[in-house]
Amino acid sequence: MTALAARRRHPLATALLVMIGLIVTGVLYAAATPGRASAAPSAVNDVEAGKQLFLANCATCHGTNAEGRRNAPSLVGVGAAAVDFQVGTGRMPMAATGPQAPKVNQVLYTPEEIKQMAAYVASLGPGPAIPSAEDVDPAKGDVAEGGLIFRTNCAMCHNIAGKGGALTRGKYAPSLAGVTPEHIYEALVTGPQSMPVFTDQTITPANKRDIIAYLKSVEEAPAPGGLSLGSLGPVTEGLVGWLVGLGLLIGCAVWLGAKSS
Amino acid sequence: MSESSNLPEVSGGSSSGTVAVPDRFEDPGLPQHRNRVTDVDAQAARRAERQVAALFGLSAVGTLLALVAYFALPYDTSLGYIDYLGRVQLSNLLVGLGLFIALFGIGAGAVHWVKTLMPDDEQIQERHALRGSDEDRDIAVAIFKESAEETGVGRRPLIRNSLIGAMALAPLPAVVLLRDLGPLPGSKLSETIWKRGTALVRDPEGGKIKASDLVEGSVVHVLPEGIEETEHPLNEKAKAPVLLIRLAPGLLDETSRAGAYQGIVAYSKICTHMGCPVALYEQQTHHLLCPCHQSTFDLTQHCKVIFGPARRPLPQLPITVDDEGYLVAQDRFHEAVGPSFWERG
Image 1: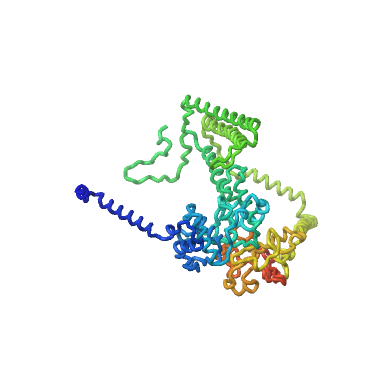
Image 2: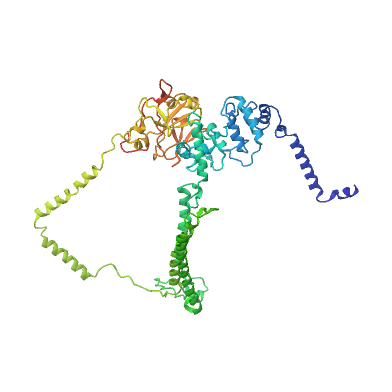
């Protein structure tokens, strides 16, 4: 004790004290925060558990009854598919307000929790459900037909090879490479953010599966010409042509014109 | 070779700071010839010689490499995916690389040879005045005068005038032929096959559309029914595509609402600027964006141009439903679709 008392004027003592204080506060806060902690998987009804998760994580923006607020749409009738897509790709909860809710690689919730939230939102009003594994199986789709539909309906925003593209004022159509078939299907039926909705009547479920088959086939297809330059078309190809190709030619011209030492 | 020897001499060099300006600048002549290392150092010359020979030798190796790669390697041996290179075929890669080395080696060797070993003495070729001598000019004028005298143009006005008349008429067939290059477009640019009662079908799958098929935020790409049975389906497809969009009816202005059905509107997909398909629909802002030049149209204001080079709104196709509940055209387009043309009324 005396040793401790003797060191209380040590230059590092204040820093140590602040550090201990911060850690204690953090631990207490984590323990007291609702949401994650209250969402332990259990036999409780999914809807009830989902409601608790919703109140803790979503209600700030979407309202306690999911009725929507300024800048946050009502979630009544968006269906389980919308929740599975938005939360499952990390787009929701949105990290910051901005023109676009970007895909986040680190998803905050377990599949179980997402299922519970989806069940709660689906209980608010009828909406698109999460597709079955068969609905989205690329092996069962027609690649050629999918390509035809993709080029008419999707390619103008998402690029012919699904590499994404720019929209107005900071918004963009994301790349579709690496997106799971379920999420592609859910995006089609729910129309997240700037994307229009493609109902089962406007693009049949079978045709949606064709689109998924096309996208997966494009993703796996080799680039026979070597470097694909992002499959972005003439813009990147022209840029490389101008910078690298003309750069080399200019370099040669400068060498030709320079007097030897 | 001292550095200062290439500089012009400083005149005067007086410490007072004034420099005497000559009445007339004299031709400073060529800078002094600077010898290259290879000119003064025999060892460097031999090194350059070896370098040139090495480049030519490298070229020969490249040629052999291309030949060996072409004949010895199966064309479909894949190296798999290589970062920054994509999927690479070994045979392709080596043939290309070999040809590059072969050609570039010859070129680089030749340039190196010229620059280091061939003479680089400055040669002077004086320009001469462009004006001919007075004597030559007099002779030329005399020839012209003599020729004019011999033809007798001045004395025989009949010949002169008939020649001028013939030459004035000669280009007329060209004007007539050029004018008649193919039939004029007539009303083709102003009209599409849409008319009252034409059903809207989905592009590319086909099939009529019910109003209930669309929810708010839905988009359907649409062609007129029967477009494949027309004489020139591709020509018709260049004009007739339509974008069908449903939004909350309250968002539409009065003009758009007249041609809408329960918040479903149909607009021409052909940009009024250069004819690209305007199909990027942002369902939250209700803007249509053209991918070519970023012209942006606002659906809630009858597709008014709110950004970009387009000068006219997209024409609206007025729609309604038929007895069976399928969406059909209420009427044809009230104006020509697509970009401007001379006779556009």
